[in-house]
Every structure is written in structure tokens, then in C-alpha cells.
Length: 168
Image (cartoon, rainbow, N blue to C red; front, side):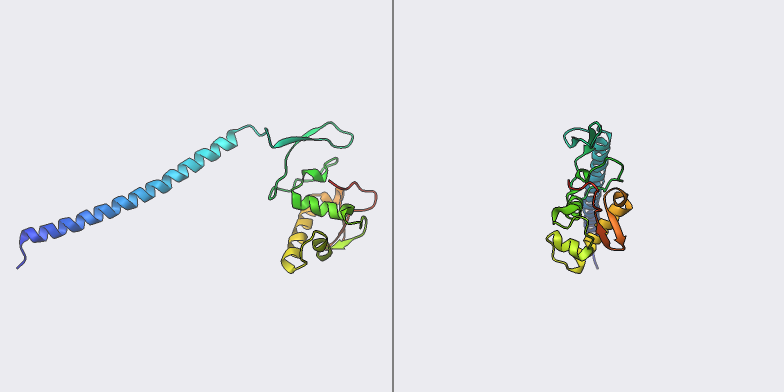
């Protein structure tokens, strides 16, 4: 027959192990919670900072006064086109598309499909790259860059009309 003291020691050991496990779980949960608090505070600080500074550069638009425009970086949003806005405000991949269509490849005014455009950009014309070019060209169209700079002669066939501004 087991002793009462032995049974109590066994239950005490089990309870201590459970408390230690729960304390470890609590430490992990507190660490996760602390990371979220820090992230929220950091985002709040960043959003509270005035928009401006070193990543804002003056952009001179033909016939107008300089306009402050954020430097475009890969992955930045394509702005909606408005009169006087040049492709220089676009992210590099979009500027390259505009440059190729505007005559950077000697085909100014000549329509290109997305496969030709991908090849002109130096990319292998595989379906993934062609679809990437197509989505970028369509995004330029959706943001009004077609009206200002590009023409989509028929679905998937893009050009810069002769007489339109071009280049970066």
C-alpha cells in the first residue's frame, strides 16, 4: 500500500511541472504580446511623422512650377496620371515599360504585344514574365496613363502614339 506522503509528493511534483509549463507558455504569450505592442507603437510613430524629407524630390513638369513628388521605388503604387505628370514618378519597372514603348528600343509609335514588350525589356518571354508585363501595362492603363502617354490599340497591344511625350 502506497504511503500518503508518497502520494502527496507525487501530486505536488505533477502540480509543479504543470505550473512550470504554464509559466513558460505565459512567457511566450507575453513576448508575442510585447512584439505586437512595439509594432503598433512603431507604426503609430511612422504614420505621425510629417510626409516629406529625404525621399521627396522636386520634379519639374514642362511649363509648370516644380512639384514635390515622392521618389518611386520598386513596389510603389502607380499614381493616377494627370496632365503634366511624367513617367519619372513611376517605379523603375513601369518607367522601363514606358521607355521601351516611347522609343527606347527604336520602335516609337509601333505597337507591341506583351510578349514583344517582355523581350524588349530583356526578359525571357515566358508566360510568367509576359503576364507580369501585361498586368503592369494594364495597371498603367487603369491609372490613366493610356490617355496621357500610351495607346492600347486593341487588348494587349500597346504603343506610345507619335507626337506624345515620352522617355523618363
